[in-house]
Structures are given as structure tokens and as C-alpha cells.
Figure 1: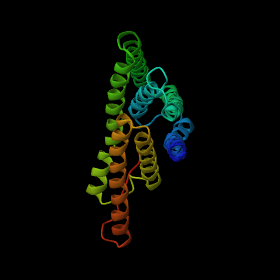
Figure 2: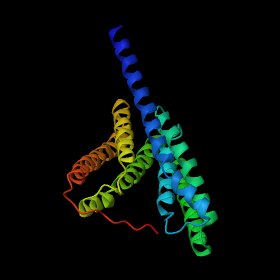
Figure 3: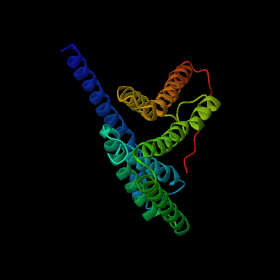
Figure 4: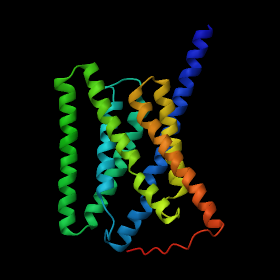
Length: 235
């Protein structure tokens, strides 16, 4: 009886962690909306880059495939969060292509086709070449590499914050949402005993903690007037 109760509690925590991860990830997915409102309003992509959305789309597709029953059962919250993420990224890419200059439009369309081809190849190899266990390892390592690369991307922003002694380029709520999402999916991975989940998200949690620590440190310096005002020119 005690074992069954502990199992139920364990399952409850697992579900809670998965739902929390989905909620915090949703905050990250909607964060680019102001940028795309500006693109639509100005009918131009200006100096914005579409590459982050192309990469995020591929990342969501790979992680969605890993969370699907065809690859691994029992991690449905990984599939749901990345299905939403893939839809959001595809919408952003479509808007970007619609308002980009012709040369950039062609390049973005080409990259989108490359991403779809890569994902198609991954699915083909998974289903036609590998057995169920091999499929988990193959797609699992791909998802780990993809997630770690995504979580490592803010290192440039961290470097910029240290260089400028300003947190203007690192919004607090995005860093907080990244921390909470990574922490939630780290816990979810631990509950599911899945290193392909808790290792990359654990790394993401650590990097997010660094971002938050830098935010509080440099925002306090700013309040004390220990740095010169930063002049930012937006183009």
C-alpha cells in the first residue's frame, strides 16, 4: 500500500513538473511577438535576423520527435511543449519571409527546406534503420546536442552584459522563464529517469542562474551609479 502511495505521489510530481515546463516554455514562445508586430507594422524585417527562428524550429521538431510514442513512450509533456513551439516558430518564420527582402526571402525559404529535409532524414533513419532502443539513443543524443546549443546561445548576451556592465540586453522575465522552464524539465527528466532530458535542461538551469545572478549584480551597480549610462542605437 505504501509503495502504491509513493508511486502515485511520484507520478503526481512528474505530471506537475511537465505541466509547469509547458507553461514556462509558452512564455518564451510568445516573447518574440512584439518583434513581429513591429515587422508587420513597418512591413520590413529591418535588421532583424530570421536564423534564430529557423534553428528553434529544428530544435522543436527534433525534441517533438523524441517525445513522440514512436521514439519513446511516457514523456508526453515533451511532445506537447515542442509541438506548440514548432507551430509558433513556423508562424514567425512565415511572417519573416513575407516581409523580408527578396534575397533574404529566398535564403530563408532555402533554410526552411533544409530544416524540413534534415528532420525528414532523421525520421526516416529512426523508423527504417534503427530498432526501438536504437531509435531512443539516436534521437536522444540529437535532442541533447540541440538543446545544449540552444541553451548556450545566451553566452553571447552574458558576455555583452559583462562588457557593457548593463542588463539592458538581458530582459529579466525572459531569463526567469528560461530558468523555471529548464528547472521544470530537469525535474521531469529526473522523475522519468531520462538523462536525455535532465542533462541538457540541467545545463540550461545553470546558465539561467548565471544570467539571473548577473542581472541582479549589474542592476544593483546601475542603481548605485557605478557605471556610465549606456547609449543604445536601434536600427
